[in-house]
Length: 203
Image (tube, rainbow, N blue to C red; front, top):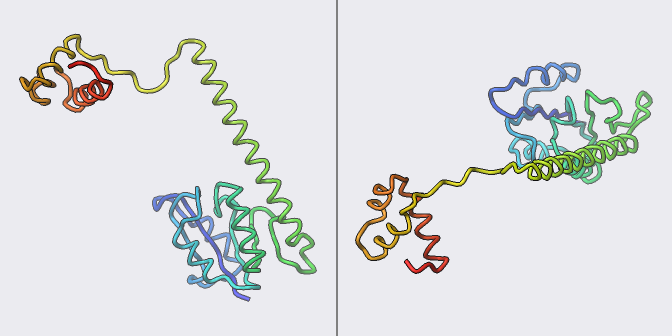
């Protein structure tokens, strides 16, 4: 049986020492510690992919806490099942005693309890996300009722912009000159000018 550890922080400016110290009781060689410096939003991480290629049946994967594996519990469930059911390796999460798939006289939890605990975590996380989205939607609806406008404020166009557009269409002004004449940015004028043409204005 080989033992491996997975360590993750979101950026290279963050410190992995706390996670490394937690692994000392396992006496792992440095080459068996896989570390990613990126977000846990998905599993497209180079060190994690190398780890999966190393893991074999009967091996043990050690993680400090479940959020080091990932942030999305539905994705974590998929990875957990892949490691424990397809690869047939074990996982132990140091900060959560029940997340330990090993079977031994000292460990009465094993895969069944670990799977159930993870399923509960996934349900709670999904429910919380739905509550957050619901609260956000209710907050936006309430704000709109009060007349609050969301998004970037619309740029107020000069009163004579349409007549300048006509001059552009006739070839009397360039886009750059027209924007300078109106005192607005070239991109702002160009967007307005093109929109008018698309909408079929008689310029």
